[in-house]
Length: 350
Image (cartoon, rainbow, N blue to C red; front, side):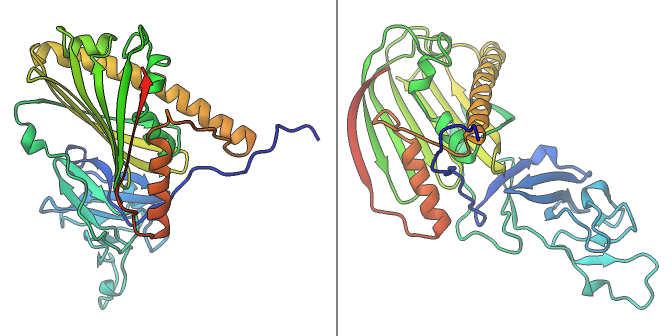
């Protein structure tokens, strides 16, 4: 039989259920139920009569109809569209229309732990469980002088591939040529530091990127301070500083919808010498163009992994964060304690 060359059959998929993930923005959750899938778990999110958010398994226990097809009734409870069963935010059944003699409280729908923080709704897809640690905090209160832009996009790629792509410097000179880098390469030092729950790459002696984004953030040029960071289970963060004039912080909160589909809630905070009302629409267009290029490549990568029946990666020292992220994801999935801090430093051209 004709077939492609064999691979190890391995795919970099880690399923970390007992963690917080962004399900939606707070502003998206009003008086109508919202369907969301986290790590393959179908959920319905809604606000009760007092405005409190809740998350239930998107399946009415009566006849398995999606609860997201229902509505929030005048009682403030989530009402199934099929027979009108009503549930509160904890999943407790509060009403079975027409049932004589009570019995509602004997019935319930599985619920998921939920927290609202910094304008985001965080949910744990391990039904009935709550993570030991609170959700990741961006620290927006410390960025009061910045302009904030939020946007949600999806990528056809594993959580690991999407995280690596968001934090990978070498590809920007080729896939995003002219937008980020791509002209004369410069020698840069990078210091990589891994902790039990995170990994950071600090770039030292990096000139302002010569692409359009760099010119928008700092027209005068200069040496930038640049960090790329990953935090368990699914946060990618990029930070640029240039003196006191420019600061750019992008936090991508990644939510694995399925093994090969990842939703990114990007929160960008920026401060520059240029007026924000002029810069904001330009940066949004450029950022969406960059992501569109990344999305095409992530899909092509995923399709090829599927076509060959697995991954066959060949990493080098230039893959600063991808292998480190995978190591942390696998340790967390297995419930293994993180290792002690590990640091290394090297030089490369970008």
